[in-house]
Amino acid sequence: MEDRALRALLEQVAQGTVSTEEARAQIAHGSFEDLGYAKPDLDRGRRQGVSEVIYGAGKTAEQIAGIVASLRRGGEDHVMITRLDAQKEAEVRVLLSPEDAKAFAYHELPRVGTVGDAPAPDGVGYIAVAAAGTSDLYCAEEAAITAEMLGSRVVRLYDVGVAGIHRLLAHVDEIRGASAVVAVAGMEGALASVVGGLVPCPVIACPTSVGYGASFGGISALLAMLNSCASGVSVVNIDNGFGAGYQAALIDHVGRA
Image (cartoon, rainbow, N blue to C red; front, top):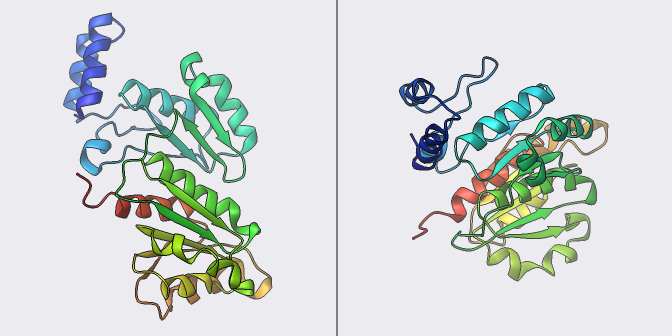
């Protein structure tokens, strides 16, 4: 069991809000809580360095609020909910405890909810999130907020697509100085290859579903990025800003003292 979770559990036992039998069961289960509809993993932060993130799509507001409460009881200071639409956000806010509701924030464009402020950055440098067009910002912001919630400083470079490459080149020092670059693009997905040819750090390409008919909902950008001739480019799934930001944050924390 993670130290924070164990301390929180022992405090609850001392306060009488959790019985000794319930505490014994939680410890025996390897620090997950069985809610019936979900088993929040309270030990993930210890195992992986990052606590569980809630995927909001397909879950009810009641389920999301219940998982948030479980993670917070387990000692998590920062909880993130992805793919949370605005209607469900309003329902979740009402269902949270007064303390968690006060700490809850909703980011409408990327459809991300957070409970607790982002931690102070403690990476080795910073992450640059470069978005080809304004239409890609929903995905770029998901990546940026994810990285910030995981303790990375983020530099946002938006509307720097290859149709006006001088806009990207105006920020070449910023992208070259990053620990990792997240390149977010739809259409033909060329931004990732261009960035990959300019920087000494890993580039995480994130294709979006933005584009006309022959973009096939992002498949064209995905295939272009997978076939990039820039050697340092890796690729996440279509519209997976969360995965891109997560991977970039892990890179930013490699070698951290």
